[in-house]
Image (cartoon, rainbow, N blue to C red; front, side, top):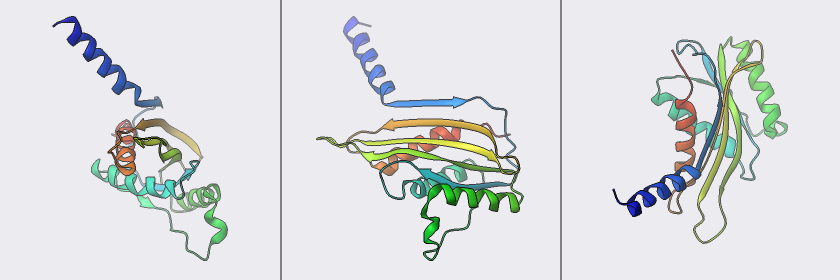
Length: 172
């Protein structure tokens, strides 16, 4: 292989690797057959309803892995004070405990936007957590971020991040 080809290959690997970042906490395997639920993903981004969008994508990603989740009760328009994500999360964790769920998946959206500029690349940053509702203990956690290509959709970029995060969850 010529040095130009090798240099080009290294440049591509560096560029692609620089677009995606993931961190995680090692944890033991979690039982797939347990009672699982999904509680709100808190939105820390500037995009309205980014947490709810991430939840819907996550439901389909986890279904691909054979994990069936019970979804927390949807807040109606009459529950205006429950628009605060942290309050919704608190109430959903209480719901999960009353339903005797073994584990729930939650997390946060840190970034959900198209970057400004000529290309307008989608950028997504998400953290997922598996929580034991009875104790409030975080059993597993992983964060990921990705900047997509200029012609890629925001939902497509989010799906890639969520698929990577969910794929790292060890289920037995």
